[in-house]
Image 1 (cartoon, rainbow, N blue to C red):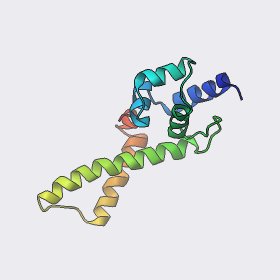
Image 2 (cartoon, rainbow, N blue to C red; image 1 turned 90 degrees about the vertical axis):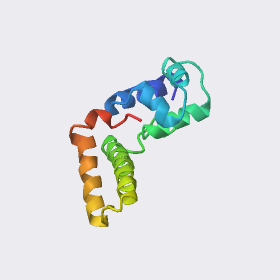
Image 3 (cartoon, rainbow, N blue to C red; image 1 turned 90 degrees about the horizontal axis):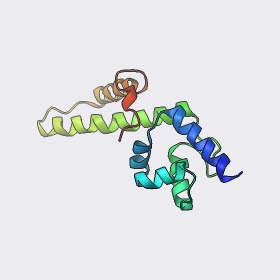
Image 4 (spheres, helix red, strand yellow; image 1 turned 60 degrees about the vertical axis):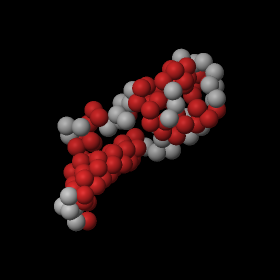
Length: 126
């Protein structure tokens, strides 16, 4: 596979999942300029390519390792867990923490909002 073919696969994947270059940079812990250089076809480190492809659920050759639906569900779960944990930490400080069943319900509802609801456009925001 050529570098150009890999670049096209990565571009297509990025567009399919709806992640911006800015959010891709933040989530992969790479600089915006580094990501921009990659997408413009400039030379970048192999570790940069690996971080980008891993975040997008691709292997180093641009082949799908994680399907888009699973990738989005994982991101929604992680993000929902993070947000709910912030609420839980604050509530615990006030001695009003939620029980495990209530927590799981809240996580699932938040996850659903990231996948299909009002927060859908925020799924890939860092």
